[in-house]
Length: 153
Image (cartoon, rainbow, N blue to C red; front, side, top):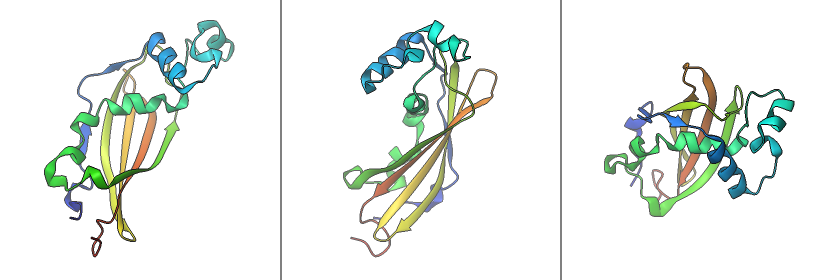
């Protein structure tokens, strides 16, 4: 079954803000095995010109994930069969690092659904903003629905 292309352009939000703490940053850095002191020590972060500890670049997925429960790809009418899905691509475009003390909101958008051979690619772009409404990062995620393109079985 092909994915419902009527969802292109659909936006969705996180609802509740996500509060970034030093502890959450440290736990994430530990989980990915990154010992950079700027992720743990306010002094080390300040030496680099930051007001507090900063998060590793891939931490953006945590803030973007806050909106994932509202993502329409979870709806039956979207037409996505999770048994056929693989992760295709992930990127983060930062304006500034995420740092302890940030209160972030995420707004996602189904930016594109297109065929790639027998597969369909769904590109989701999520803007992550701070408490002042300033864009901090855009997370771009591409998922691949294997074998569901027109003519695919």
